[in-house]
Image (tube, rainbow, N blue to C red):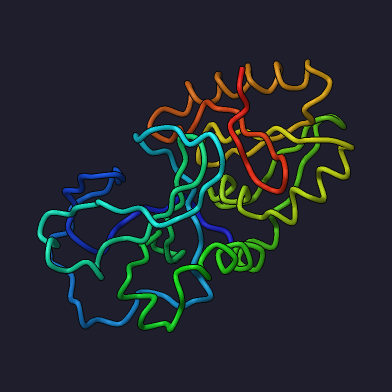
Length: 231
């Protein structure tokens, strides 16, 4: 399943304030609370995106609260489902369709009989199935980067089994960066040149990405979770 880059819609009115900031276009019609979900459990994916709130030094996946959308003040089930993550990143769940991404709502998971805590693992499993051509390219033995991921490459950070295997492959801790929506690259924590080179490339890619930029931070895979690499 390979897509050209798609639009992202809420399937609802824009005008969002609070913890999360979603850059989306307003829809002309107010959402129908009784309408069926836009997709199925088989095309739910995770979008790892930047947020404007305080940095989280250690991975902490839990529902975002305090979000407001103009016109939906009394319809909380129509709010998009977003989880906190790590650093300046959050996790936004969406249906991945040929026409674009459509944010998942509380109403959707009720209709699909899904529990909120199932979403991270489900998104990882779906990503593997929906993008079978996703691969790891290794321009040098010390560097890995994902390709053919449909601009969902940063979501690979949620595939914790993969990172444990890579940790064994590298023989030590891994540093990862997601400077843009189609970039997720990584290297070993040692030698130090690995990290300095990745940092320089990340800052350059983030600057060049414009409105598709995500994060300039470096993330360390340690103790089976992500944390911000200090320094």
